[in-house]
Image: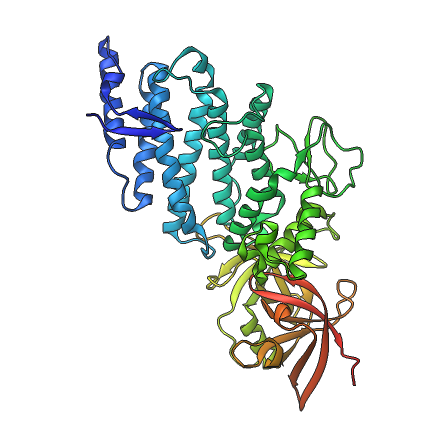
Length: 517
């Protein structure tokens, strides 16, 4: 009995009798098809990455085989199912990767993305003859073909987001054109057999992730963003025409002819022919959910994952609400630069730096400033180990033009290859005071926590702020006792007024002196 293979809910026998031959050319084609089918009949490799090269080779060979369209379609469906399974096995390995990626991981990522792009292109190339041929007595619906192409392109972009790499050339344009084909043929809202959601839903999910500025999230945070979008992304909706109020919050647009992700309407007006959508309802829901969590409601009660109740989860939701609902214009213009700087990375190293600058604080990394504005920098890595760096980290920068250390938060990180890493920094303060946060209210191990006290930074911040490990604000509600070691030991009683920043690494908490006696 011939082995069976399942694709899209339909089981196919891997039997060459399904591919009758009538000529020498067809006989040669069947030999090539047999090689592909024989490989598909073998069990998947123990290591998923070992499947990438043969899958890509078989897809490439299938393009060259001179055979009937229905035979090509059938084998493509089988290869798609195998490729989809391999990519799903490899995606979890991208959670928690450090930047820049190692050569091995980068090689795997490139293999995954090449495979997905090939699958998407091959499905789009089969659209022209779908109505003329049958596959095992069943038509492969055109909407299923478009859905698989759209899903492959969306997954290609998701991988780029996980590894903080720019999208491949032409990927956004292909995605936009695929969805345009679906709308032209009235398939956007058709329920697709064996697929998760409609073509409109999968396209919107991809757009929403791009609107969330994924380069500003670590790879672990991307998982929560994706899970949230899968649960609530349907609340975003397309608009019938470009908005008459370009300053309206939560409005984004895409130009189907441009190879680019969505743009916020508040930053740039939509051009003629742009497709607009709104995230206002989604942002409002996020703010309601955050209020419910702060009031003590369990995440499950409002259909959120359990990780939403953690400090990291709070930070992700807070930033999503901002990016989707309040993406304003840039406050300052950026100026191109070309001078050196060094970075000190992480709260422990910064604490040591400001406690005693002459004490060794660990290895400093060397960077080139590529542009700057009054509130931040863009940097390119030159030398030094960067394994600890991720979006949301706290760093101190000292440039050739400014001798003092400036405290910054890493707003985004991008890496095109193993030798390349770029960062975007926002300045939090131009100086800091090292201190200890008394253990009574915030520590789980009974020890004082090293923290930094940031002075007022007008006009960015009108009060002092505390830089502390993630979760401090959640555990330290009420009065905070700070121990400052300068000439003498100084004890400060402070109140946390609100949370300014929250990432997976640190929190920036606005503080003011306690008025209690």
